[in-house]
Image 1 (tube, helix red, strand yellow):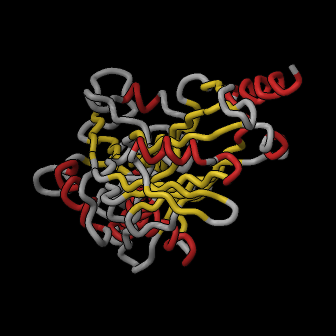
Image 2 (tube, helix red, strand yellow):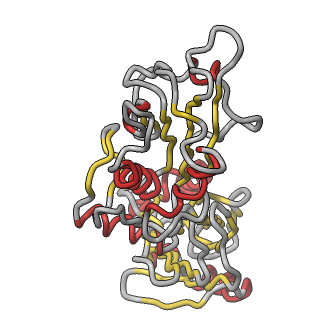
Length: 325
């Protein structure tokens, strides 16, 4: 959802809007809210609750009351529908039309201007901005849950509700950056042949709206790249706990501080060794895998092909040159 103008909305801004509805924007004509006698329609709060539910359960958006389906001002809604004014009344009722109530929303009133106004005197267009909610899913007054799908507020199915619950109540932490740190260290002192050591660093980011209180990351390196020298380097760094299986070495690090929404942090480093006996494995697509554990979310996982890094490619060429020279 786009940020609201700092100074509020004007009729000129309404006229500049895209003239169609989409997942973040809904137009409702004045008859949706008031009848021919300019009284509040009986079913308004139920209808309003469906729109509020849909925006809050999704990525947020704005509901504009007083524009027809083409985005044209239709005269507007009386500014004194309720005691204290229509805007103040909407500010009170919008958060309460869903369960659980919204924690925040904005209501803007665009009133009549002296010249060339499509808003009638004593009337206004109301822009209701509803942010995506960390307390979703929100239930409408008809005891159903709604979501914006293809520009419409539609009832949510069981799968949609489960998706919102997972998205809302569990952090989403994943690897944001993974790559070499510095140049390869080239070594010709080992009697077994030339070796190149490459250090890889991983950063993670919390892409959810939830605080990640407990986060651990595993890097899974094929064993041919984790010889005794690599294991000594990792032990000296002291960042990780190490475990081994016949095919790979796993380095695990627990991040002791919470990760805030949208925050990116350094996670862990790992060394690898390139030598004559693992060149073929690199060419065949050997990868560095990763897994992230964040609170009780389903672990995130992925991998990155080692030979895709330019530093690794340079190290491979150097080892080959030493062997043929």
